[in-house]
Each structure stands twice: as structure tokens, then as C-alpha cells.
Image (cartoon, rainbow, N blue to C red):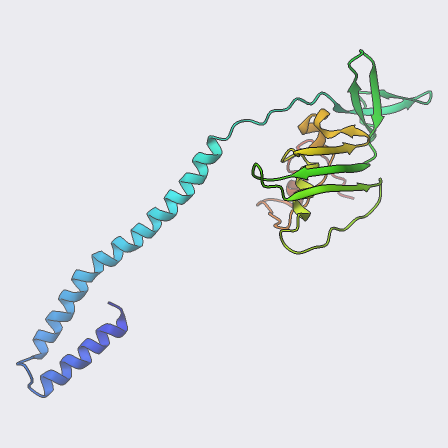
Length: 226
């Protein structure tokens, strides 16, 4: 019972006691209200604890589902390396040149280096989060290096899905996605995602300095404080 209900009971009991109805006395009213509180209090506590238990079980279910997730399979063999031009030829280097290239070993033993520029192409892509339930049909688009493109549409139209596919958070059902002319299925996932910057709608900041937040995920980054 809430405070309002107790107040109403006290009011009704007071009226009965004043008018001498039913042999109701003030002591009887006080005793009744006190016993009611004593009886109801543990019930309220149990209901509150049950709510916490239900929330804990829901959280535990998500945790166990995450623990049961199978590791991602990665059959990619194209890697991202530091590169520089030597006599006009793009070569791999251990120096921090701020230039990156895709190290692409071909089946015939030939090794090719493709400079990272950021050309994205999707050709006839089909995708669905569930089997036999396609949400993207025959999507074709391209983005040139340095080009700014905006995806505009209603919620659920597939804007975030396209971004997730480029990062290979999901694999497409049909079609091809090429990155600098290379099928992204051939690129190692870690190297693919390292070459991309992604800012989600929900931004999370961690306790610490601004530099710590910027450095998150790449611990060796340094900053010039001047």
C-alpha cells in the first residue's frame, strides 16, 4: 500500500471512531495500520528484488551469448604495410613513411604492392542479416579517393548496413566489394579495419585525458603538445 492508501484508511478509520460506528477505536486503527505496513513491507522488498533479478538474468544472457560467439573466420591474405617509392617503384619499408600499401601475393608467386588511396566500389551487392531475408538488393556504388558522399534515408533503409559491409562486420551474400581494386574478402580483416575510420552515432568517451581517448586502439600514437 502507498502513502495515499494509508492516508485514506486512516481517514476512514478516524471517521468510524469519531462516530462510534462498529466499535472502531483509535488504538484499533493504529494497530491495523502498523500491522498492514509490517505485512506489506517484505512483499514490496521481494518485488523490488525480483525486478533486479530479472534485469540481472537479461544481462547474464547477453554476456553468455557473447562468450559463446564463435571466433571470426579470416581467410584474407592481403596485408597493409608501410611503403615508399624507390626509383619510381612502390616498395615495402619498415620506416614510418605515412604512406601505406596493400601487400598482395598472387597465386603465381608474384608480389604486388597497391598504394592505399581509399577507392571503394560495390558491384551488384545482395545482403541479408537472416538467411533467405535479403535487405539490400543489387546495390552498386563507388566512392573515389577524397570524395565526400552522404547516405540519406529513413531509419532502416540500410545506411549503417552499407558501412558495416565495407568493414566486413558482415559478409555479403552476392556481388563484390572492392577496396583500391582488391576484393575485400582477400584482405585480412584487421588490416582492412585499420585502414578505415568509423564514427558511430553513439559516441563513447572513456575516463582519462583527451589524448587517451584519441589514442584508444592505437597505443603507440604520440602527440605534439606545442
